Image 1 (tube, helix red, strand yellow):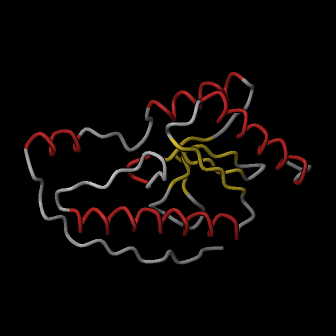
Image 2 (tube, rainbow, N blue to C red; image 1 turned 60 degrees about the vertical axis):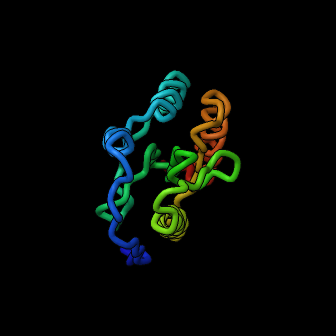
Length: 154
């Protein structure tokens, strides 16, 4: 069951404001971040097995950070800056109009991905990068256990 994603239009980037900013942004990790690795280690230590960077069914360019495929639990570890954390998200001062559009598009894409997954019977768990890994892993384990009760065949 494939569902078309909501188009996210971000204007062309106006260019970096400095070489330092450009260098910093070019090395920002998209996957296997420290918060992701910490949560994955704890989940694995609990005996849970999962897929990493698993494609959202029907969405070639979107991935689930941690996917429990049989119970259908999708876990996203969201960076506070990139996903607009209400506690720690910041708004850059330079190129602010572009960044505002970019971060709004990120949040809209997140909501669209959640809706697509839920329509396909998945549970979605979103974890902020600032959350304590052990608490996040416990919350994820609870979701996986509850999903397994709802889907006992798997």
